[in-house]
Length: 323
Image (cartoon, rainbow, N blue to C red; front, side, top):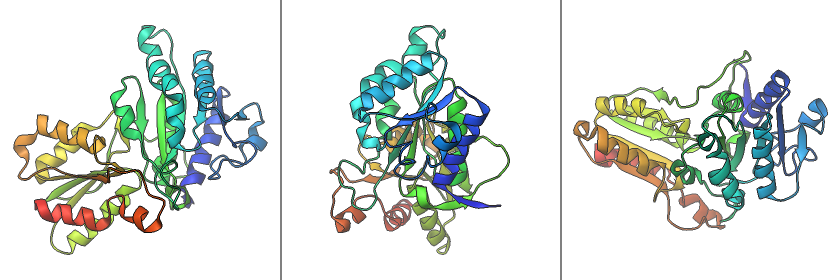
């Protein structure tokens, strides 16, 4: 199978969906002029025109609000946040408008808008350009939230998000943009709400997503050499969350570790740990371990930035501790 980068995979998804459906368009800062700061929109304006690939003012409120309005008017907009850190400026449009419209109108209106949000730590971008904020949106009914970890799912989840009649937040890690992986050339969709067991095992379950999944796989390989058989689950979607896959794994392995780059306090790991404790705690033979970023702003210093998120060693040690 061919290998392309994460950014190229999302670009293919955009082009295919724009060809398939003339209602699909994209807007955001520096998209048409620059092709996106990570190259994820490069070539789209030349192919589809500047009416469907629109540069916007530096106003997140305008970008998201226009997307909601366009969706209500029958279009299928994709709006780009440039960096997820700026999403707070448009929070009213997200949690009070796009998340609630379909419910408040009794299903008579749909809001098929995709909000793309590049996130994560990279190259000392510092505290205002490095965050992972997906847990904010676990608390908002009416939104779907997807977080791919590889190019194939990046393409498949973006296509599914664009076709969904509900608002979807699409988090894409900035480091992943440059990474290559196998991506099918034929048409496919990655289902929203379905986790993927990327490695089967019997001794401990590790649940993760996005960039941290790679660290989990590396830790699992190291643990295998010591005779500890690890099952690794890629969530892919955190809303709706595939609890059944997590529960089935925990029932088998009796141990659970959850890891993500976002701050540990109040993170996705906390929600998973609470759900497992409520529903399948009788299967556990040890404590649930959560790993996440430290409860500080993300430092500019490269040395400090490196130790801020959980490392392979942290994940390895957590498994050893509960086993």
